[in-house]
Image: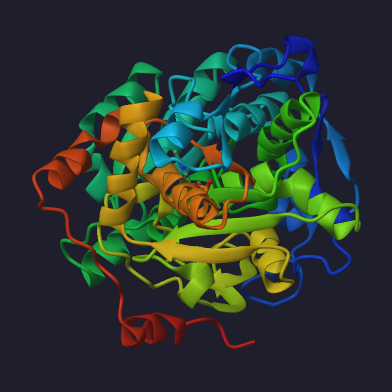
Length: 453
Ligand SMILES: *Cc1c(COP(=O)(O)O)cnc(C)c1O
């Protein structure tokens, strides 16, 4: 059967349930702990911060399938099923016998996969009768996705945006405001934790961990508000499983078995979502895949962090999570691939990595922009810097196949487009981009502050 450039599923082939890979893990990810008592958090405790049904999903490590409500499926239909593209042009350019596929998630205004979870979280907030939600955003994709989802369900949306992105990406901010969101640079003077961080680190660029603390405080101090998060959490990986389920359905349609599956890893949500159905098969002993998480050398939580309980946020107000972490006080250099700047990693991805179900590698910023441009010039899509981490490693794997003569099937997640990252592309084109790699001492210093268990 000849494989088309783009494999499109029909609307009625959109998954009816999300897949929860935790159900198939014999050793489950470690539970979230209450930061004061170090006991596993209860549903009631989580429900003060998150919407009730999302808190239930967060704690659910038993049900393999959770049905996608019709309202969410209807919204998904505006931009899904997303195409699985056969990268014929890239294969030709590289001269590789490998077959390269990418799942393209950039086909919506937010420009990334984040809308898949934003719409789910907004739906449950609306269903619970809330007035609005608060959140943080790093590079801005999550904030954009959430403002789109909130405007769809007529919810108030308050976004704390990492200061360096707020300044570097004014157009992102304006898209959010166009969808009706309130955007505040973080650390701000609106919250207690923001004022404290500003006092301690005057002139700070901000960080995701710090913006999270502000958004949580804003949610818990206003009646009718809850906090929502765009990555890291198990509920977000659950929603993102729609990526992997569609990818698998598209491959199955043409009888293609993936050999290598690659995703970029910031908090782990797109990677977790893409690989979940495949990891499930590995866990059930049904198949084998080489799964690779790609992270930036500037923020290498899997490849250089420790697998310990840590704070999820700088303000230390969120539950503790066991994850590969660089320490919650780790301040990544202001690299342009802003969406991958989080100090920790999803506890599900961390546990899969620890069990050897997936492996990890790290790449530097200049390498990924080089790969991004090569990709853009042959495949037409201008990729987000985050996504380009996966592109880089997919190209490397394809070049290895060129040496060995193997025709492997390489599948990677192309999480989004890079139209709002043109300053970074500009720096690269001008030869002004620098790579920053933290020293062992810097990482050890931040790790020294993980909670003593
Ligand atoms: C946010 C983002 C990422 C990283 O987040 P994960 O939770 O690790 O998936 C990757 N790519 C794009 C385009 C993003 O917006």
